[in-house]
Each structure stands twice: as C-alpha cells, then as structure tokens.
Image 1: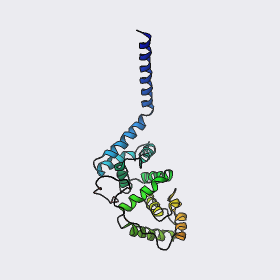
Image 2: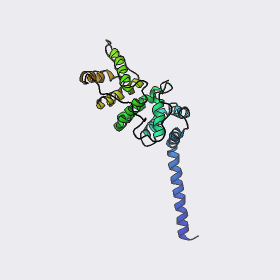
Image 3: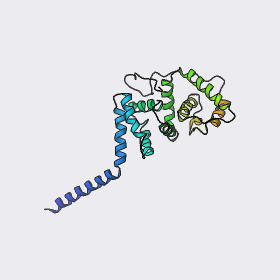
Image 4: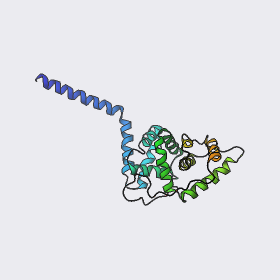
Length: 218
C-alpha cells in the first residue's frame, strides 16, 4: 500500500475515533438536545407537555432543565410557546418554574419576551390581571410575617415589574426576597399604573396562524 493511502487511512481512523469519543462523552447532552427538538416539533401542546415532562424527572433533572431552558428565546417560536404554556399549567413542577425564572435572571433580554407572552395569555385583561395580583400581594405583605410566594407567583410578579417600568426589580426575584422588592415597588410606583394592552400575538416575532389555546393555567 502506498504511503499516502496509509496516511489517509490513518487519518480516517483517527477522525472516527475522535468522533466516537466525542459522542461517548457528550451522549447525554445529545439525548437532551434531541428531546428539546421533539418539544419544538410536537404537533400539539398536549404532546409537547408529554415531552417536557421527561425533563422534570430523574436524577439528572437539573442538567435536563438547564438544557431545556437554554433553548428558550433562541429562535424556535413554537418551542417557546409550548414551554411558556407549560410553565403556567397546573402540570408544571415548581422546579421547572424556578429554573425558568432563573433563566430570566441570567439572560435578562428574555424578561421582555416573557412579559409580552404573560400579557397575551392573561385570563383577565392585563390591567385587571395586574390589579388582581396587587390586591393579593398587598394582603400578603400586610401580614405580620409575610409568607413566601410560589415560583408561579414569582413569574407573575416578574412580568408585572417589567410591564410597569421596574425591570430591575424582576432580576433574580425569589420567593424569599419578593417582599422587599414589592415594598420598594409599592413605594415608588405611580398612583396610576401605565395601561397595558393585550398583545395580538404571543411573542413579538410570532409568525403564522395564532395558537388556538391561549389560557394554560387549568
């Protein structure tokens, strides 16, 4: 065999071995990425939920949730919609909601996207929904020992802070620090909050037909 053929064969072997080693070392991440893809191409929200449920279980749940949330807001609008719908759904876990909220803190450019979606899917008109949340949190804040709120309520409050012009208060909001943030917001916000119009689309960059399902809490 000629020398150049031997070198070419050796190169193929080395490339193949390297690719095999990379796949072996990154196999779990490839599995998670494949699962993310299946969420985005699911033909219905119900089927997307079944795919998302896989990320919420198992000993490697934290790694799976990180991979899932890393994809949100990166270009797949249908994926974004399915995940946002699930986060607000009764079947979502608090672990997923916590991971979602923290992703908003790590990638602050996502906060406006979440607030836009939140306004679009609010069961009441956005102004009424915000007023309802304020009434509820005012009661909690007035207690002698304010209670923690849930991560679902944290996500609601993050949207409210952004929509009313207090985006910085939404950064790293938690069930533990909400009371201090809410107090600061209550003391400095205008007496009349800005009017929030319900968006026509779930996201500013949404294309194609509008989703049939808007409300996803039940």
